[in-house]
Amino acid sequence: MTDPLRVLVVEDEWLIAEDIAACLRASGHQVIGPAPSVAAALRLIGENPVDVALLDVQLHGETSLAIAEELQTRQVPFACLSGFGPRDVPSAFANFRFVRKPADQAAILRALAELVPAS
Image (cartoon, rainbow, N blue to C red; front, side, top):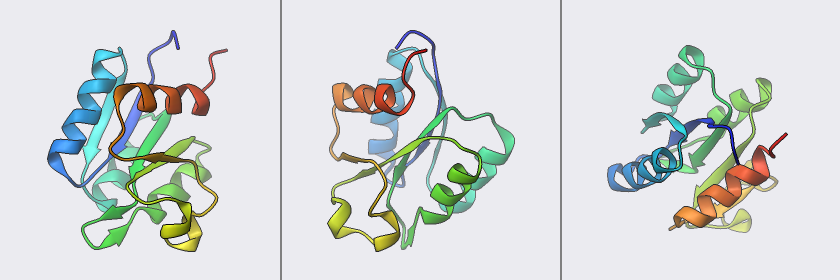
């Protein structure tokens, strides 16, 4: 991936969010967030151009489904970061792309490359 991306990171665990953000920054990408909640993520989407997003599924008692729906409306590709797989999450998430947590830098960058192929 040659061009830097503006990546929305939605993660409610501070340390995990910072690890993901550091990985992205080290690879030259701009991090939007990290956002720890649905409300914060939706606000960031409204205020910033986003090329791609990485979403934790469970956020302090709520899911990131509203964020996923907003991203789909805006045609922004995203992947769900989760310790669970597609069969273990609410059915509305079943067809989304998943990256298994804990995800290392290679897995995160591979997901971004698959979501936003180089042109």
